[in-house]
Image: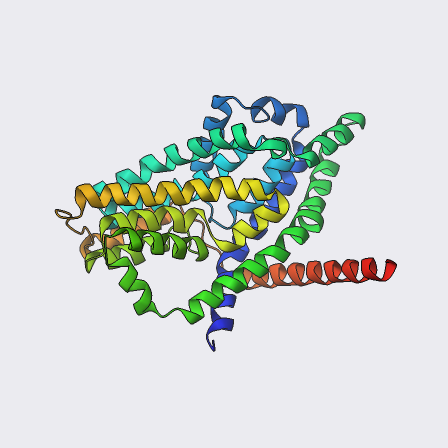
Length: 355
């Protein structure tokens, strides 16, 4: 438990810059995009819209936690639930830097399966979300905001951008940061309580219980879109089953507790159940298939002689933030989150007093 503050701070410091950048992008898009354009492109249940969202996510080199505000902003701006969740899942998996490291450190077999899953999984989730999303298929916020925008005159570009940034940080960031702090605290608690030897023991066995265990672990942990690959490569090199690696790669990077809590509160419970349920089921099934075909003859690819070259190449597709910005962003997320919790508490107290 003594390590809890350190784990919490490191997670916030690692995800903070991506979150701040995402809030800014969301605000700019909110100010520029007209509802009718987004509705025409992604505001429908067409298969092509899901493919567009998947490809858009694949081209965005962003952290798995940073993509969450973009996802919420996309849905609130008029995208249907299917394309929204497809974008949410595709962005962290089909990361150019992650794919380079995966092919170099994990080998062609695992990396190819990972790459194919990066396109198949978002499309499956998008189709299911559009079919079973219910009232969440179209965001009620998007409908209200579309009516307001269509009823008002189009202001100058500068004012739209300024208004969008104000919405991104004063509205979206304040609401989202509260749940990010809650989820990050819980994830840091898991890191502080579970010993590494316990994790390694579950990763070493190819049986179904290990697949289920690593799925739950990956769903609760926060891992970077690229930072988890060297960790998995090292474990594979000492005997971890290849199916376990594939399952953790998918579930760990697509689902994490801060993201799930934020999507639950900002979009809806059904959205979380759809995308988390499909990711978990797909990850377990795919891990079992990989172990069935590759476990006996799999040779680890991890080789330090080619590692530096792969990392250098991957760096070309990765955005690095200076330390001062990491600290600033982490502090900003914490301030916004605490402010949101204070305002939420005050509303609850006033509501009880009014009764």
